[in-house]
Length: 295
Image 1 (cartoon, rainbow, N blue to C red):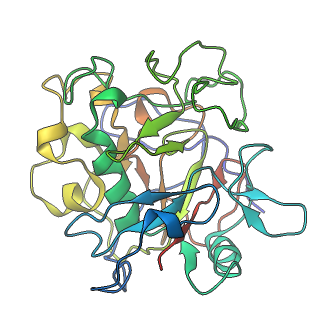
Image 2 (image 1 turned 30 degrees about the vertical axis):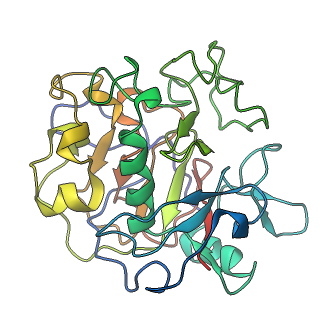
């Protein structure tokens, strides 16, 4: 099975990484999230899943998402737990099947659900280095290559730099901080960096080029599917750290989509990072997954 070395994409004038995980252009999801008129409450979220408010046009109802990247519970069942290294070297079909094996309300996260979470995070001041939305950068998570592997998490949300060699907290910002806070106060781990994560969507046509997310054209298909709202993009969007939003490697048609980036990507990692290089049957040690619960 081919190993994804370290997500390499040629992004305009960006440095080239030594990996082979390709980028692709996404097609809209085949179904919406949840059922209109069905109100999911936070109390219905499974253990270690967090409640995510819906966001038009991406999701029509709220949903629950795994707080942590999925781990193997030792019996081949995916678990959202802090301890243990994330489940990797699994292709997209297998990852989706594992999520669905948890029950009829579970699935692999979709691109629209990812966008719902990322755009929510971008609007929360505490995720920004300045403490002000659209000023400075959003933290990248474990993205500097030290250590050179994916990390386990911890249950203490006040220790979000755990394992990175950096020091931060829920109130002290650092670019390697591995947590982000949603508008409802819920905390999610490693949505940016640590590992690429599969989403359910396929691509049909590659886009013409690759971007830093912050430099996308307002209102175009690329920004709508993979990018931030312009109101949450910092003024210095053309230079590193590119608002901390990451890179969109969408100039290739690999057939499947990975989001978030991995542990060596530096300023190309981010909550909006997208790769379209790999086919759906690709499996490597820097690609994991995350499940959702919808009703």
